[in-house]
Length: 489
Image (tube, rainbow, N blue to C red; front, side, top):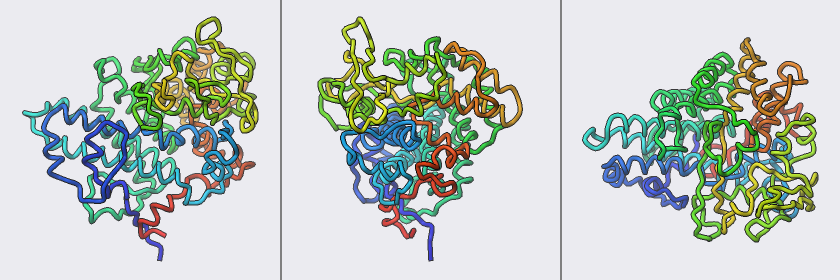
């Protein structure tokens, strides 16, 4: 008999020591959670803030799951070639690209564990901050910190349901007797996500209300945007239209005049950024120590271009099919795609001519959005300070257009606002195809493509030639490692 209880490995591990640190180490013991340690820790507002930082921290564990935003979105979406050194380099990706994967794909297990570790941190923070007395923390600070934890928890559950569909729903710190958890219906997970983001939006400050030291943390607009994203994925078009209208009318965000400037290191957290995962170069020079910097830049740097004296790894190389999607004269193409032999930062000490020709890069292009000039490259190439942009205002406008198209309303104005920024006239595409096109070129190489075509019901149309089957490949299988820990078979 098939049973649907899943043993939550991440929940069964020692939570306290993982929560009470802002480093990225993920080493745990299989023992009961030390309740007394938690009670002793949550005795000051500063410690409560540190606990919330520990929740955000898991979002940036890129050393082990940087593949999810980019490799899954771009490469499985076939906007990027896998690339790498040789065919066997990171060969776990091969069966994902061809939609022949099985539950023993180890990266699926890493992502699953990380998301549930993050959820456990959020649950721990929420439960313990709620218990804190008013003489230790103000009601305002308590509400703000709990809202941040709910925002981060909503993010992890969004990634889980997007990737796997039905997953265990855990809304509290589990006791050992609860580690076997049933799979919840997708609708239940979505309702939980909506509740978390809605509650966060009610309690969090706007961008203009946020204090300078909190830049990078969740805001009202970020929570609203993720709520809109949840509605979009469920095709709740009227709700998505309403919430994106609120974001647009808030006046909190604006498109930068120059598209290319959005992705420059010196412009991070600009007026167009609704939410991004923050990274910082620590400068300790130790490769692979999972510090506060990101490895994404070196992952996508061309193999023939020196990255701080070391060649990049050459993954996620744009395809010719993506390049051909751009209209003539669209400056977004030059801001996104590095061509073989192209020179960037001409006339500066950073001037670099790129060689993007290597065997696994089939079309000889490289991703510019996450490419840093030499002066901004870290001494340790796993330690770049480049943030991951999760939601931009341009995407909010395109969600608004998509929702208006389906729900009824003016979809042309938000779409044209995105095109106006890059000097393009009316779209040459008709109806929903205009929105699909604009999303692809506006958000290219930012990790959205696969998820877009799946949620739009176009998986077989776009990816069928690569093996995608509707109803079979909409979600990925739960990792065999997790199944082996459980009574699910």
